[in-house]
Figure 1 (cartoon, helix red, strand yellow):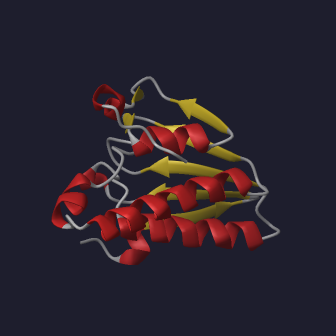
Figure 2 (cartoon, rainbow, N blue to C red):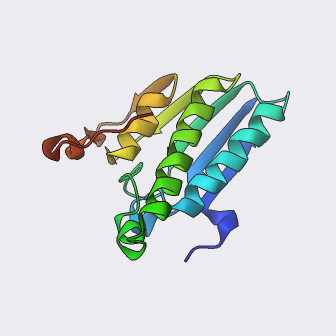
Length: 145
């Protein structure tokens, strides 16, 4: 597992804070730990008066493949899944309430909860390699945030 400090990295340049999802080998899947790290960074930038814009990016070949399905399979209990989805909803709502505009910098896949993450941002800039999908709708699943 990647060190918690590396799951989401913050880098500041002028008045722009860039938050980069740092699990490239897992296509930046949104594990519980990634959601926790992202929530903590969002709280930090919200409180930082020097930050006027937030950019959300993904390291490696993908923006985000969505929820970490391996983690979900490893925790088959309903309580864990409820906690995970509540945490994800909390992050999405925090993004919408952030005082700074949030720009998704998208390359590669943004699918499922990764696509939701993009849709929750104020603006998305998509590179030529960007691909968006919500495959859960094919089996009747969709986010409730």
